[in-house]
Image (cartoon, rainbow, N blue to C red; front, side, top):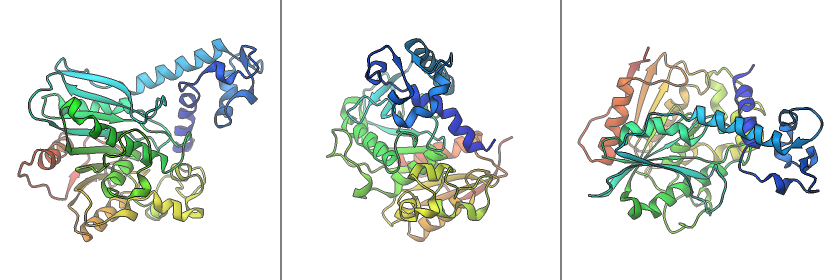
Length: 367
């Protein structure tokens, strides 16, 4: 099975299992749901929820399906144990609504005294069709465990629910919310580092190059007076130019109508070039962009390595502080002591002001 079709298949359950109201869908109030009563965007899941195949969804079937979705999300979001010195504040809405996707988690020192702390924010991947903010805990907790930083993990609407630029509107609303609550949580809003992988790498890259781009701000939440600029970006193998992804070789056809990029923008990317460019970090490169470090494997089968190469080159040409870490023989996802060291070093330089040198380099893929 094509890997991205598989991802879409995995996502189908959570789409229906979002916090919707059974009674609000039950228009004729007969205590069961017909296919026509379901919102159009999720009718394709009807047969999977209708466990006894009688042509109706009962409350019992609905709840069983929701529970399976919760269990899958819980399993996928398991991270490191939260140390006693830290506090996890989960599922905070940032868009002034009840959409569970438009929420963030905070990981904070229990002792929040002293000077305001820099904030490190993680944004999850999953082809914009899958994933959950809970997976960011394992990235954030090690960095904030000694109390130097505060941490957050952002959720956003997936492409099965909303198309571009909704994802960027969500991320920017979350950044504005964090800045709007900086005093409450003793966070320094002027020292905000962001980190993301794959689709999350794309979103953090967009945040890094789109400060001041009004068209991508959106109007979500109640902190419109705050800006969504960040301080620095860690990009793990995020796409940078949708229209050229097929040029460098990939295991999938990114130009196809069912590709993650096409589903994100609402149509085949080559047939919707203007919208595809509007979702590409390369489009917004300018001299005032923030420092960015890229990590990308040379054997990445999903997001071609060249996506980080051309992005890094464009940033350097514009005079932006950009660093490319080439992970020789690395695939789509990696970890290791050297990578962890470089991420920590990057944040210490740009969030703590330590005079550290970080240069582009090639490292071997961790075994």
